[in-house]
Length: 316
Image (tube, rainbow, N blue to C red; front, side):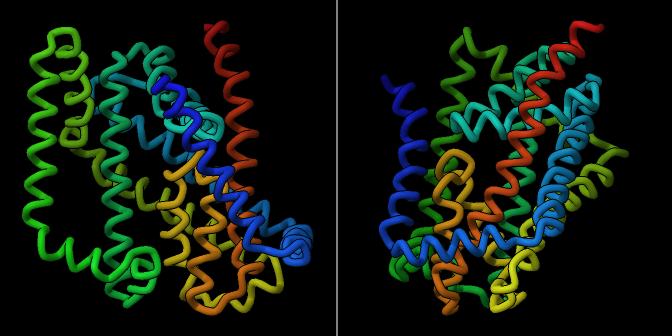
């Protein structure tokens, strides 16, 4: 039962936000949003799709550095395809993509499953670090409104006053969880292989600069894909260029709330832009267009990957 709840909850959450979007807009506004989207210049839409696809291609190639550091090699095509398969799977069943990707990388490259999980976890740490660096940059640039629009001031005062206790609690939970996992013999070997894969970050050696460069390129391409949308519709010219970067950060965090941000992504961008007096129709059109570009290219290449990889395996 819990398994079905985990699968259905994000889907239902996504549809709830779609319902909420419909509920806060009139039929005339929805028609206006659709007219904006239909008028989008195809060259900028394709550019957004391509930059998003390039980011995922580099993500796949970047993983090979971690595989190499853990003592294994990986087929470039398999590494790239696994990323698109991961994201296309997440569009259907949330959180299923990481399991699928680890399984594909393990099966096609003959790498222990625990190590693939570990290296993917290492990637997540890097990406989360980049995300928090971006948040710090935004804070330095005085975009506090992004955070304040989602949380009450008292929430931040509470966090600030109790930060040492919160950090201690998180560390305690992590330590206790680690001890429990290590003591269970049935998962000890698997857990240790995850740790080994995670520690592959420290073994990158000469590949470390290339790994960092790849990481920066991934996020640069993701942002460029998001930024390209601004030029696709004439009406988007009212959005100040300085708001695109923080709006991008809002979109990054919204993706994890439902199936690859279904429903949440456009509404979050719209609510953020509304804080700066950008009307709801413009914000929703921007959000839906940006989300759709990435969803479409992910489904296309992900679908091809599901078809091509088995053929590749049978030809070996």
